[in-house]
Length: 413
Image (cartoon, helix red, strand yellow):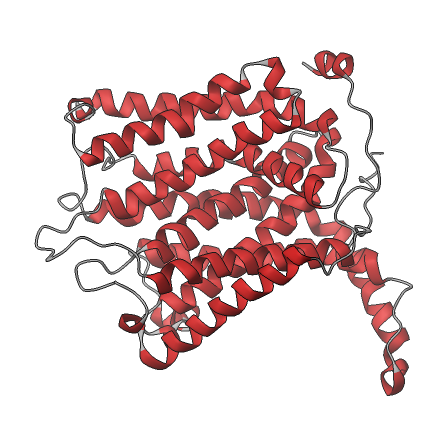
């Protein structure tokens, strides 16, 4: 029987100058959010009737969902569905990233919604609208977020079973809490496969539906991005960024915590990136050819340059880099190539939601305000801060690193 990969809390000093900087940035985001709730969206954003969404949707929601779910879904599918258990050391960090990513997506969406106090409406069956793509996105995100928390529960149980030491008057609850943790651990171990399957399915559903949101605006979008298969392209891009996001997160965590990179699993995983990214790029090119939209590629417009930059820096360049053994075996070059893929998907979401979207009667072009920019930066800082705290408390990262072996990796292929 396969034994799960061992993990332990990271042994690293938490309070560093970088942590203090993250706290300051996160604090600025909190102040902006409070100001927005008191004085409204117009007080801190450049959104209006022509541009109802900005970078809070393009980056905080659309990009955040792709990066958060893509990494964990592909890692979970690779280990639990395709039984490639050597990659299991990457699943817990990917799960934590997905759980935090979706939590912060929900928080960011709350700040972005004009009538945020009505967020509970989709949870009421009497208010369901089955013809709404946005309703499907909202319900999938709510359910998927709960699935992620349930999948994280065994890690909480592993950390605190036999180690519940409540202080003072709360000490009387030590035994009941420990018994509850043991019960949850036993129960979830029997049914966890159901939540893994549900997570993969739900992720695929709302990844594609995010692209479906824009199908109702064919005359407001540039032909380079508007296509009937936009939901399919959103799904493919989320799959394409899955493995790069796992590698990106693992290498950054290694640098941050002074650990040796897990190249014995990252290098063979990088080979799969060329497959998923290649399928996505082929689909994009085929779509342009079939729709005859390629005629807009070299017309010299701002949109054409943005599309070419997205394709080159987010697709062709990292693809060429990852085809090289030198890149796949080098932590720094591998980080650079996967960073390009991650930024490429973010670039795509910005292009689709902001660059391609042009209302015919807009009085002025949209550009994010300082409030929007600082809030987004603060949300990213807060996510990084909570991630660092989580890996120092819970067993997320593996305790040690196997030596990187070029021979073993070649045999894997």
